[in-house]
Image (tube, rainbow, N blue to C red; front, side):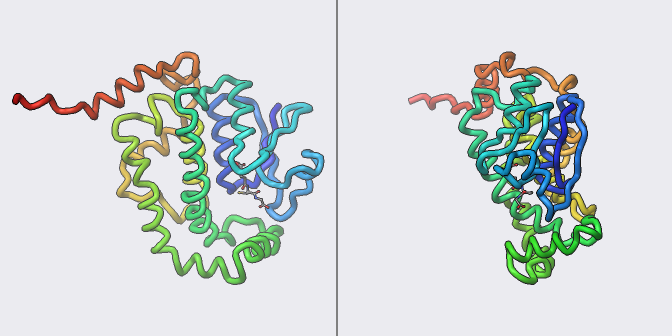
Length: 250
Ligand SMILES: N[C@@H](CCC(=O)N[C@@H](CS)C(=O)NCC(=O)O)C(=O)O
């Protein structure tokens, strides 16, 4: 059985967990303290200390850089999830950078403000020290004070996704792909403490989120399998919204 080694509120772990659930893949989670990455260090033979990683029998899978998406690609290939259809190569890489930098950077701060409510007592000293060493002393109090500004910032950052969902059920087309799960992870992290909701103004995102939260590959329509996806169909559907007006008679 696959093991997901994780810190449960981490946006990147929430994304991979959802992918595993989506694929109907048998897995168990192993929670590690945020400040103690010794299990990750040991399993990756001292090559990685981030989370998540997965262990699949003798295979240990971990990221090689910020944009590698090795875990998702491994699961995609092994279980034929259709997460990285060829048609969207390049486009999706630009999107996931935005999701994992801009969107993630705002979501985790908004959630971390409530850290005392979800970080186990035994991990709290390590958590605070880890944050303050990275972002400076008092950073969490600053994020608390900046909450209204960050909420507005997040509304603004999410606006392009709201527009994307205007004419399709998922971010890119008729089927969920990696970027859907990636954004899901960031927004699940935002809501982890239970104190934040998705911005109400983004009504389509508010419908998309629970859809992605529950989705199983067996229910996903159409092109979950990349070999079944039809780029021409997608292209025609997208372009039909932007038809040029008929030429004016001269
Ligand atoms: N691109 C990586 C990013 C993973 C990542 O940044 N994880 C954070 C936790 S949310 C981490 O472990 N950072 C290293 C650290 O905390 O020392 C992925 O997709 O898994």
